[in-house]
Length: 163
Length: 424
Image (cartoon, rainbow over all chains, first blue to last red; front, side):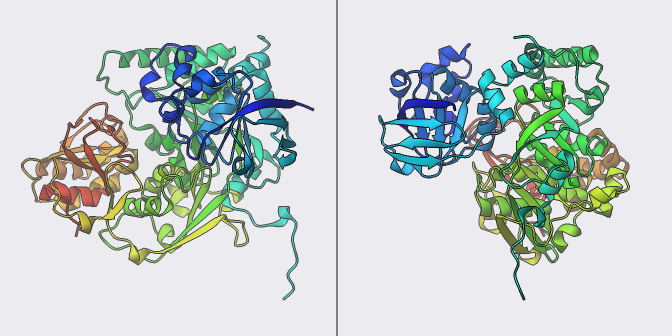
């Protein structure tokens, strides 16, 4: 059973892709150059505080806005293990899976969570927090394969026998 | 009457559920994640370099089926900036290397060509690298926009994962008023739903007013469904669809209506008689006002065209308003047919002549002005009444341009008056 545990950063509703990575930084050469500006319109200090293995918990419609694939790439590059939200915007959801960022929909955890606390995700089963279990839906194997491979490009390279 | 609880798989189905079930050969419900077999894909000039790069990085050596891939140059045609031509060179080289024959270099806007040239048929599953790929729902196809990484993977595998969407049913009964076009209908709906009101959901249209619409009118509605966040917007194929697509509907295509006992997350009903001409005001596409409330606002330019409203009936509606009249002296009227075929039809019918005599500038088919790249961009403080699909900040020039989205009939009336007026 896959399990991941991490410290939580809490963000609100409607975190849009311009908050995740503002347009003015999209022309920087690499994701590593961009990642220091992640979430800067909302919390300029956050990108520097996030540690590899941390988890983001947010409200509804996370990732709304443009189709920029850099948004999930930034979050992944900061070392975030997964984002747990009430709901995700459609194109962001797809771009995340395809860039190997795990997203989990959970309707009630957000209402209980406190920033800085620790949660454990038991993949495809539930989230453990504060002695309580929050059920989550299972992702089908084909999507888990994409995430485990580290994104769609890597999954396709594997399919083609390259890695 | 005894109510018996039925198993989920015995429930009636929405149109999108029927399409996905036919495609995958299995029973589905909203929320299921399934892999679909793709019938057709469209790549346009803006993203072809990125698709080509990802395709190579993924290690594919051939396209899953070159016949199912369509490459269309429309956003950058004819080139307005020096770098634009690189996209054509990359596209041409990609098409030649992988044996693609469906390449359109100057025939019109992608979303017009995909159904007009017969690439998408009722009941098909199609994806494109443009958010307005929802357009093909006008013929009862499931079509949606995706990113370039996903497009590259479809090119190699012919498959794509999707989450089966819930469906919002929109029923419009009655007869639309003479001065109302389908553009007014979709703008009103977007206003009522909000710009995220249909996120991840399918829209499904029915009712007598929808049945009496032309395929072209339905196309305007499915084109703009994405502006409410929708994944797709579906119309039931009928005789008009069959004629437009040049097919005889088979049993599957005839079955693409929402069952009476299908499960809808929301049902919205309108009386067609209640619609009035409306506009989306700067700078949100869901900021809808009646044209009558905006009358008198002075304007600098009018744009009639795009994949939303550049079809023959749109140009004809504008010509009807403009016949024997002149565009106001200080207003620039730009007309862009959605395809070469429409351009020629409009020429043959004398529509272009009428528009030109009224003072219109008629441009080549393409995306140019709608995406703010060429052919009539505006500057600070200017106002434009436009028939395209987005009035976002900076879309057609600087961020201080005010864009009002309207129907071709309303736009033409405004061009004559030099200010916002309600069409007769």
